[in-house]
Figure 1 (spheres, rainbow, N blue to C red):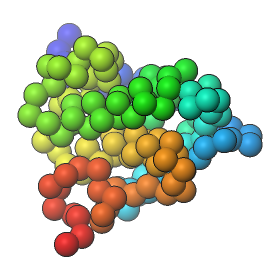
Figure 2 (figure 1 turned 180 degrees about the vertical axis):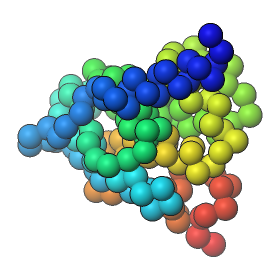
Figure 3 (figure 1 turned 90 degrees about the horizontal axis):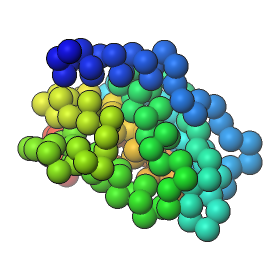
Figure 4 (figure 1 turned 45 degrees about the vertical axis):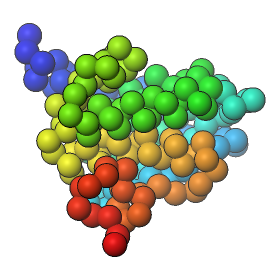
Length: 161
């Protein structure tokens, strides 16, 4: 099976059957994420105890890439300390925007299916939105965006000057 077929199967599986879908009642941390370029709009909610993500859910309206990324993200960070979740978010950003995915593959496991989108900046933003929103929630920020000074994709040409 080719890497493209694996990518498509994983994306479709997580899009059709998203893991951790919904909103936590009375979350300790939450944030709203917006990707105006694509129309993705989601919320991440968490129950955090001693800077450890005990539970995490997300919901919203988004494209298949964003939906799948959110599903896989929540599965990866549930039970992790803030520092580990932030490190994973940075590794994922590097995987989707950097020149080589070899080092990140060890830590990210199944998330490496997203490595092929690095040449498509608008798709990278779709994949990054859940992670960017997670980071905002961890940092007690109410909102994350993929545009302007909040652009998670350095050099994509949409940052404010």
